[in-house]
Length: 311
Ligand code: CP
Image (cartoon, rainbow, N blue to C red; front, side):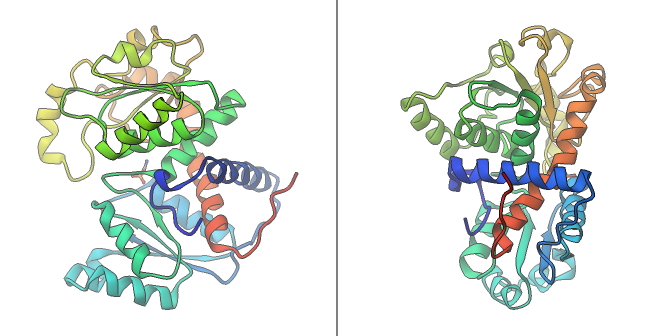
C-alpha cells in the first residue's frame, strides 16, 4: 500500500491489517508502551476545510509516534495563489515523508499522489473519507468482536461518508443497507462497486426508505445533512431530509442493542436526535478516539520501513 486515497484502492487484507495494527497501537498507548516508530519523520497536512478530529488526531498521532506534523492551509501556501498541485507535490516530496490532504475534489489528492513520491493520505474529500471509516470499522469490531455478517444501516446523504462506508463495510464482509432522499444517492463509482460485490454474493441495498436501512441493523450510522462547502443549501436540505432523523422511533426497527455511530460534528435535531446521541455517546466518542489509533496505524503502514505486528 503506497497511499490512502480511497478505500476502493485497498484490499480486504490491507484494511484488516490496519485495524489489527490500530488495536495494537491503542493497547500500547493505554499501557504507556512507547512506540516512536516514526522518529525523525515529518508529515505535511494541507487543509482547505475546517477540522477538529482529523487535524488534532493526526498531529497528536505523529507526536506519539516520534515524528513531527506540520499544519498547512491553502491560504498560507503558494497553492492558494495558483501554484500547480503537480509542482507542490514534487516540492513537498523533497522535504517530507508523508502528506495528509483535506480538500474538495478527489482528483486533487489523486494528482498529489501521482506527481509526488511520498505517501498521500486523504483527510476527506467530497468523494471519500477513508480515515473516518477505518476508525468506524475499528470501533464496530471492538464492540461486536467481528465485522463479517453484521448489518450496517446508513441513513442520510450519499456523500463522502456514505461512499466510504459502503466500500469499507462491504469489503469487511458486512451487509449494507443505505437510505438517502431522492437526488442524494451515493457516487456512481461506489454503486458500481456495490453492484459488483452483490453479484459476487454480498448483501447491498439502496432505497429512499429509512425503515429498510434500519430494519434489523446491528449498527446504524448517519452524518450531517449539510457538508462543508454546502452551507448555502442548508435550508433546502433540511426540507429534503425531513424524516431522515435517527431517533428512538427509527432505532426501534433495529436489532436490540443496536450500536449508533456518527463521525461528528453532529447537528442534534437534524440527522440525529439529542436523546439518541447522548444515549449512544460512549460508542460515538469511542469512534472519535479511534481516529487517533486508526490513523497512527495508517501512518505506520505507509511511512515506516518495517514494523512488526505482535501476536
Ligand atoms: N469526522 C471528521 O472528519 O471530523 P473533523 O471534520 O472535525 O475532522
